[in-house]
Length: 107
Image 1 (tube, helix red, strand yellow):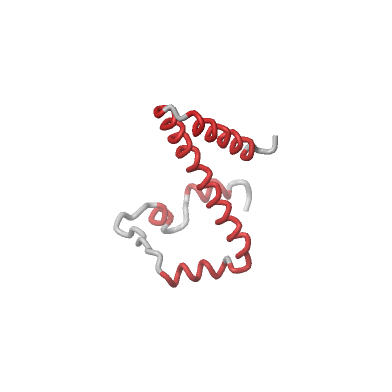
Image 2: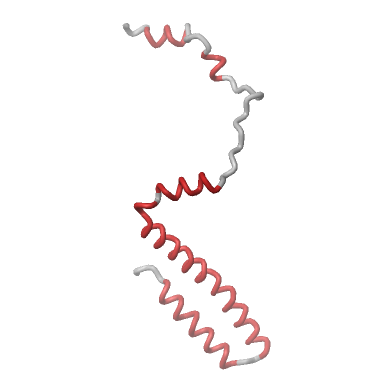
């Protein structure tokens, strides 16, 4: 096998090379629907990491909850401005400032 080996492979490819590279439209892969057995099997792989998985789910819940508080508080601010309720406006603004300070990354 010398330097001409690569040239030889490209000039004379092995048998069925073109058939393997060509996509055959008649043999599309079947879509597999997840069922209870496959989901339990996947969860069995995560058994050694159950506490990390629980921590991840808890963090996702807290993040989602905090992401939903801003629109709710902004809506309340707009409503209090429209109804001219100054005490509610001050309370909500200070609450938003406190959330912003709490959620700032370690700067």
